[in-house]
Length: 393
Image (cartoon, rainbow, N blue to C red; front, side):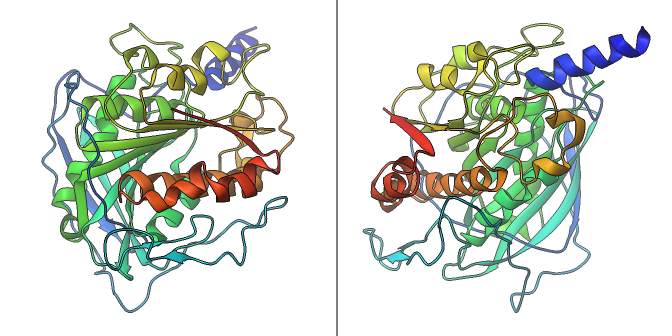
């Protein structure tokens, strides 16, 4: 009986994206971080309208960091591209010179960009919680920094490594990416506001890092996350005016196992905020026994409350876990959702392209990326093939 009860508990919170942990969160504290690293990352951008809401109990980390190996501009690992079936994204020419900024270029977001990049790892202490962060940053490319910064927040009970391909793709397009291992695991304290603080603390860590500090534009930030990470990314955008745009992957506005609404507020009900918001999601997992992304809490609820400019992309045939790098290695956490009809690699490649194009549009202020979001390229690659349905306002 005890085993059955425990399994049911795990099943409930794993499916509904409503928990957090990996670390102990207190009510007050400061954040400090130290980082060591080797390499991968990049970008630059402009500021859309900012949000003005004050955070609930924000941290004020003073971080220090060191690197064991200085990054080299001579060489660096390049990001890998997952092969897909059903979407042909190869051999597409880069469109250059489409903006009013001399020398700016529009790069195909479905392919790796022209920047080389490295990675650096660190650990932050945020209100008593040990929070890991891995940065992917440009070392060499067609434009010098400082680069726009994008935070990545993992889903409930999912490791940050399941989103590495998003980080490396963005880094190859000239962004500094902070993949944050926030406290979002089973059997831990459930506090979504604390999770948002943990993600935002990585910006302060990057600003003080001996390498990242000089190349990171921490006042021009995008916030991306999946599932629970999507919700806390939206919260982070509400709490910190440095976040200028957010694109989330099947965010779930759940509050399972939460002690109170102060710890796990209804994020969609707190919208709109005065920045561009985008939402990629699916509708296979919106109903049924313990749905992984219930209809009352899924990405469409965020979009409904968002103000213009806002984007909603429904990925037809995806399930809640299809946005991971590798569902096959996900284990029990991924086993509760509906069976998708669209291949994991197809969804992953499509989502990576949307993330790059979205931040090209709103952090780099390049309207030429609209073609990959809603325009001719998006229609040809995704809509005409029945892969997505797009709504915008």
